[in-house]
Image (cartoon, rainbow, N blue to C red; front, side, top):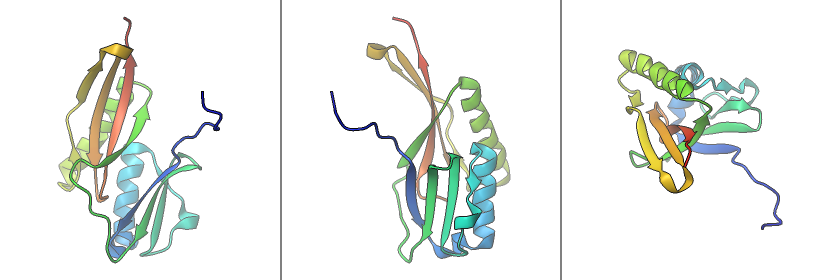
Length: 147
């Protein structure tokens, strides 16, 4: 057993072209991630064309987006994950993302995915969502099953 204190993820950082962090680009990013995921801009940290910080339901959990002359480029399925507490929440995220995709073909949404982990009595349901960031967001619901 470790004597180290418990750790948890608190942020993910990605670089973007400065233009995406100017007013119009920021507005698009904030509207999408706020509507689909409930994330909120930390306006006191925003710097036009330089920085956007999206709070992920807690002041110490956030997505940090910074301008760079050589912005991050990620392979198609590179992602970071968030979890939800129910299948209904997972479906709601997927459905909101699909609504946005009907208006903007830059939105990427997979169908609902499923993996079975019999050794630990677990089913993981997930969906991948992407919009204007180099990495996708994988949303997972962990369904614990009986032996």
